Length: 336
Ligand code: KG4
Ligand code: ZN
Image 1 (spheres, protein in one colour):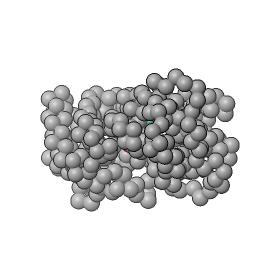
Image 2 (image 1 turned 90 degrees about the vertical axis):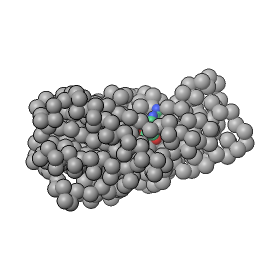
Image 3 (image 1 turned 180 degrees about the vertical axis):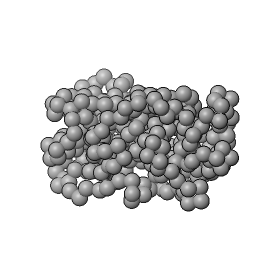
Image 4 (image 1 turned 60 degrees about the horizontal axis):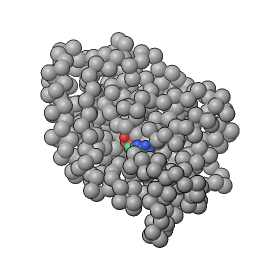
């Protein structure tokens, strides 16, 4: 079995995954949402201290549930993420690896999100085109091989999830903003919407941008616009933008027959429904992670760790570091 640790942002999580059949044996997560709620975003210093408190609690629970003698490796998210929170998981992983005398595996969080599709499944499915939408990233990724992936399109400014968090803050809703905006939007039953511009409609490259949309929303908020109408109009335009850029990707590139949406914001219902239709039009099979594994979790880290374990792809205690950005070896970049 592999014990995996996730602490890249505001969720402390530990999982234990069976190597042979990829079965998730044990998984727990302590979310810090409440602690950051009044700030409208994650406060790194608070997050770091909470991980220092919560990770040992989770480890203690895991130790009661599973005989640690069965562990063959320790996996931990090392990039990308907040340095001060990643370090908490990494130090725990190093201590465990040293104490149990088993190898250490550093995991890229974004690849972890992609492997959230295959939790509890022995087989993974590649090649695959992926839309990753989270609080820190909005990317189209060509996952042409289990381990080798190319970034095709990126955001020029904010991420999709981040724009929901910022608009929620303007509307004085709770953090994280995604579920809060989605809930409020559901309460709007009118047929008229605010006329927010769809970003990058005529941009040469396939890319994403949310800062212009965010500012357009801010103006309407300042003019005293109706909250639920703002939430629904914003959500519609943000999703339409994602769908438009994805359609351009389908048209321009020889894409794979399977398309996946992963990351915390892939829980958005409007986005999921729109993507179902788009995939139908372009004859793609849409893959989605179960809702519980969309947001950050250690189960996806453990699932990807199996691939690295089977390839003897281990890291040295002395040199494994945490990085705020993905390292150059993890992804190639396509110049459009
Ligand atoms: O993947 P994740 O848990 O953490 C990161 O790696 O960033 O994603 C969290 C992000 C937050 O910005 C949150 O507001 C957004 O995902 N999110 C959503 C929804 N649920 C979570 N955004 C839009 N609609 C949702 N239903
Ligand atoms: Zn994430």
